[in-house]
Image 1 (tube, helix red, strand yellow):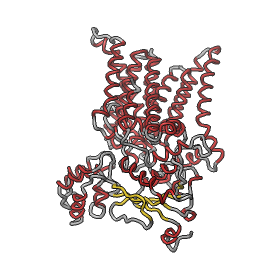
Image 2 (cartoon, rainbow, N blue to C red):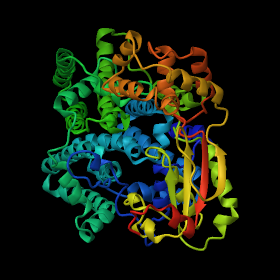
Image 3 (cartoon, helix red, strand yellow):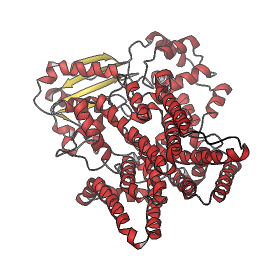
Image 4 (tube, rainbow, N blue to C red):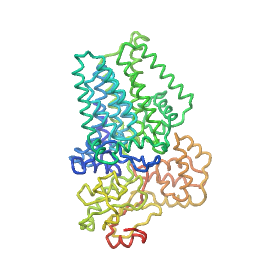
Length: 633
């Protein structure tokens, strides 16, 4: 039944999502697996934005591309991607439940199913099927953590499976590496302890399983090792240099300790609906952090002393300590930037909360017959039925509840992108070009990447599409081109605010926001330009109540952009909701217009990035005229 949870998540997002931006580039790389362009490392990170080293380090490995490759080729970009990511989530949940069943019996397996389902609930349906590298490793890391617990019990037969789960999680994203390193150390310690405790005659069969794990790891890391040897510097070397960059500004150990305390209590992390990174980095008093850690620590110590004869329980307590250290190491190194608001940087929190709740449930189950002698542990079938009800409830949640975390959010509604691509495919001017075409974007494309979306889809369909140098790392080097060496450019324009259309032959034009109340937006622009921005006490209080530094970032955006960039500001759904509930003192914005604008925003995207999207084709003559005199072409 656990398999239903990610499968329903895929079904809930089918039809309203398609690969865009990073997801589209990931699909392109997945389709290149096994070819001369087969990827050896992951997608580029944003590490160049932090510290003194401007070059972006790639995420560790390409295993995510390899897993996506069969599905995207056989079933296409939509169904193939969603089912492939759902399969990874389903496999991870099954591993978690099976390992607990293996060592704790049917009731333990039921507990694993319940806790795994709660992890899926907190991740949201979108978190179970999103192929983005920062998201993909969440449940595999949880499976690896439960696998390390099994290794601490001396179960070396699962070592190859643990190696596979750990490798997949570690290769996905830089933010996973600190927690993965701590887990690896604990796993190695568990293996060493198990081998030391075995009799000499029993060590050889055990070493075979350890050897199997090493082989699995070597095979799965072989592309990364090959890239390290063949490039100067290799990505692993670049990663080590980035880790040692003293100019980076990170959250630090004080914030990390607060993050761990937030996960541990008093409100359980697993089972929360749509948690965000801002929830974990929100400031907590030192006294509150210390009190939480002291209370939880005392419960674990007393429980460990009481259950000191049960190695399984002691290993679970040890895993809380291991994962708390993993949380501190990871949380310390998260950049002090808007990235801290992403829950994808806190995968360790799911595993830490998993073991905390497992231990607390374990203790309650053992205490219940003592406190109330008439109580028993119940039948195994009862535990299975309860687990089934919880799992089924989590599975159907995205079908009956409207949560943002259940929807894969995209910058442009999928039907708009589909219409744009249909017009491009039908354009005879584009079809007549028998030469490379460079796709560029006119407008603010930083977080939209419509050029990547269009370029990758046309390239996958067989057109000779090339990418600018700034796409280095996102595509194979053979797809990169110097703009001065190209004769045909496809310019996609995101019309919003003062963006104007370029010269050239128009071959596509679509409504970027069907149904948008443009009259209400025009009136709000006039109102916003009438007088300077004055926040007022109500809006200031609402901003201060937001977790972490979120309020400061949003407040600065409102102050600087409300009067001059009204369209861009009010088209962000969360900001618009905030202004409706807590209007600024000045300028005076009509509440009816604000509500009308909000109600007309397209379903799905978190903001409107263009009122219209156009595509123009520029040939050699037009390119020569459009290049500035200073161009060195």
